[in-house]
Image (cartoon, rainbow, N blue to C red):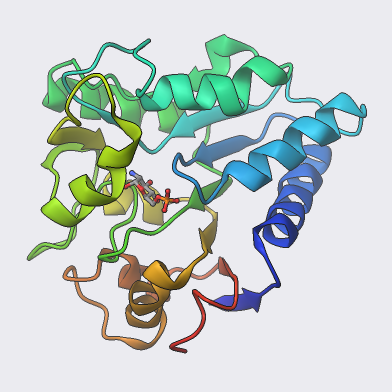
Length: 239
Ligand code: GLP
């Protein structure tokens, strides 16, 4: 794993934006795996800026998002689809036919097969962007007794519900989600993980210095050959 400790989330956003723009310039039809949550927002802001300045075009880029809540309409203001539309897709020239999203209201088994086939048909994910949960989860793969493979339906833990329910004001936060599995994430050619803030410090330490265990799902990244981690000083405090 390559570890970069930068001053703040704006600096991280700039650095990750550059990696993604370089990928798009060398492979205009590349496939990006995208994440939601606060961590990638500065990166999306910088990508929108780069697009607005004419430095990059997403017209041939394909994307697949990591996860989506169950039991929430796709267009609900708290859906991850809405998050991506507001933070990125509506502000760039991406072809929405090239945007892959898990349907949180579909049958999980058939949705998992559909998503795996769709990713494969595009040639796999070139760069997968990740955040990390306070308990070491990636996407919505919560700590458990085994690593998952393809997309599956998960029951969220209390730690994740506590961290994310601040965003829900009109409906209670769903307790289930459909998420890409650990196997699907590990098949990406390159992985970039962003973590900021003191609340992530323990999970970051476990991911980098702890044993590889499904009790800290992010620790599996130690076994991937091309992972770059971007941290601010608070998230790196326990390294
Ligand atoms: C959610 C998402 C994850 C994300 C995590 C951390 O659980 N499913 O993909 O990495 O939150 O979010 P944040 O970046 O807001 O701390």
